[in-house]
Length: 87
Image 1 (tube, rainbow, N blue to C red):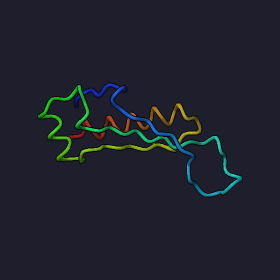
Image 2 (image 1 turned 120 degrees about the horizontal axis):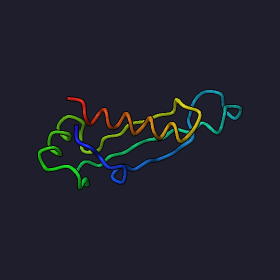
Image 3 (image 1 turned 30 degrees about the vertical axis):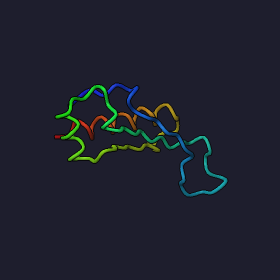
């Protein structure tokens, strides 16, 4: 699939909203990777049209599996990449 530079992906962090209330591990974070297809400079119009048709104008992937925010960011980016490269 097309390579999307990380600069074109918006990463949003938030506390995970898992069960456990105030005693949950507050260091756990949820990372959302957001890719606005139309704003991309690295995709041509054909690629943009194909991705938009398949996934919509904004493609998002979320990770909150890992303990570390860095790892969640990597996972979210990986998931976004695999969504974009899926045929």
